[in-house]
Structure formats: C-alpha cells, structure tokens
Image (cartoon, rainbow, N blue to C red; front, top):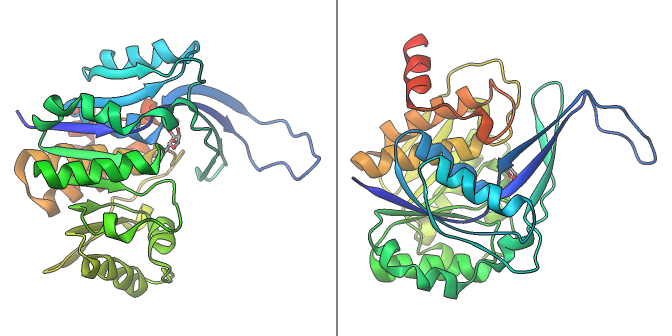
Length: 306
Ligand code: RIB
C-alpha cells in the first residue's frame, strides 16, 4: 500500500461561532464555542487517514494537557505517530478560530511546540520517510525545517507537496522551485508570487509563473469555485459541488488530505483533484475542522447523493 508522510503542525482549535466580530473595546456575546483537534498538518493527515490512506506523521506536541490527547488522536485515527514527540517545557500550538453566520472563518495561530520540529527530528525518521511515496508539508512549522524537507524530497526522489499556509511573504524561490506540487489558495498565491489574483485569468497567470519557475504542479484551491490545476502541459479548472456552507474552516486541509490519498494511489492528477473538491465541499457542511471530515463510507454516500 502507498504511504504518505505528513511533516507538519498540530493545533488545538478553539472555535467561536459568532454573528459578527466585536469592534475594538466592545464585549460581545457569541452563540457557541467548540474545542477540537486541528492544525493544518494534522488536519491533512487525519483527512487522508479517514479515507483509508496509510499515514506517517512527524509533529511536535506541547508539554501540557493538550499534548498527550493530540498524540492519542493521531493513533485513534490509525496514523503512525511514533514521531509525534513532546517539546519539553513548551506549550501546544493553539488556534482561536472565529466563524461567522455565513460560514466564513478567521484564524489566529500560536505555533508553540510546532516551531520546535527540527531538521534533526526529520533526519531521525529518515528510514521511515524513505518508505513513503509522497511528503506533505505546510508553513506552520519553522521555515528551516520546511526547506530541509524539500531538499530531502529531491535527494531521496520522493515528491513533496507544499501547502504554503499560512501565507508567508519572501519564501526562498530557490527552494520552492524544487517542489513537485504546490497547493495554495488564492491569497497564498498572491503573496507567494506578488501577482494579482482578482480574476481567473490572473490566477492562471500567477500559477503559470510558478510552473515557469520550476514547480511541476500547481493546484490553486478557490473555495466554492473549485480548483485550478496548472502544469507545464495543461491547465484545468475542476468545479466544486454546490453546497450550503456552514463552516469553511479546515476545508483546504480536507482538500489536501483527500488529494494526497487519491494521488498516491493512482498517480492521476485530475481524478484526485475531483475527489478533493468534493470531499472539501462536504466538510464545509459540518462545523469544525477535523470533526467535519467524513470517513470513506460517509464520503461514498455523499458522492452517490450528488
Ligand atoms: O486550516 C485550518 C487550520 O488552521 C485549523 O485547524 C487551525 O488549527 C489552523 O492551523
């Protein structure tokens, strides 16, 4: 069976559902609160595992009450969590998330232990990473470690997928160009390239620019508009099923986890993106990040209902 290594973050999500954000100095009562496992790396790993992928997770949890629960959550979802380790004396990553009545979200992140996932931690897992067919990473860990992972992928001939989230300006293009796959949303694409992304033509031009720099495949996630796949030889817009979105947080991670699972299985890009837009759309119909991810049976039932 093909295997995916996720080298990335975990967070505890503190989700507040509110009609609107308070203005400065205002105290406002919000409707609801929920606590859940999150973090872009963890979300992507859990989505892939829920769909039946074999996943190896490298991550750092905090030296607090969230740490052991987070590791247990990986194990409960069938993920190989031998390299989910505790950063002594450091707090867990946490993410206060605000979801408004239209389902749109705003997220703050405190990286905590995630900043301590080091190049040496990655190197210690090299024999297990070598057994993987795809490496997935994001920008909620230190940039030094992300660049190290990209170079490792090239050296070991394992494709690396980077989700450049949260967006960081001034990424080293000499590292980015080595990527097999880059999966930004529109905002991340704009920050990465410095190009406008207000229209589909502009999005396509910005994605093509990255391909011109050397990235083999760029997949731009565009929410309810679907996803745009750009390689040197093709450009395809893959539409998304129409849904009544309740909470879009974690939908991008659902996309990547599902894409990774299907892509490693058969190596076909367009069918994997089709599965991913569908899975991500389903996740927006339920509250929470990981909590909103369907397992393989629920996903099959959803696809049949479309
Ligand atoms: O992409 C959604 C995720 O971003 C949340 O789970 C939160 O933890 C932040 O990392």
